[in-house]
Image (cartoon, rainbow, N blue to C red; front, top):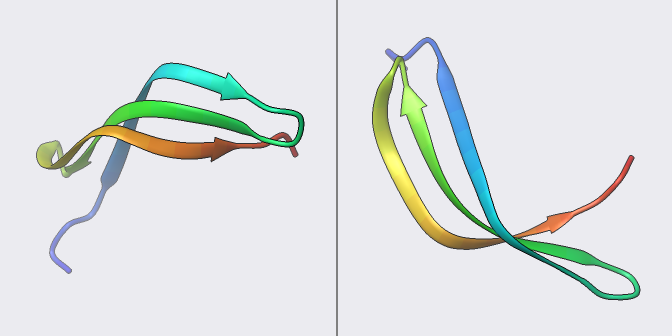
Length: 50
């Protein structure tokens, strides 16, 4: 592993709430040492409170 710093960017575009679960739809990207290495569109994520 030559990379020192990974940065995750998540931009939510929509959230849908049911009785038991909140789902989010988001676009995202990952940067390694400031260089964009991965991009994703319309990923689905579960949201929770701790």
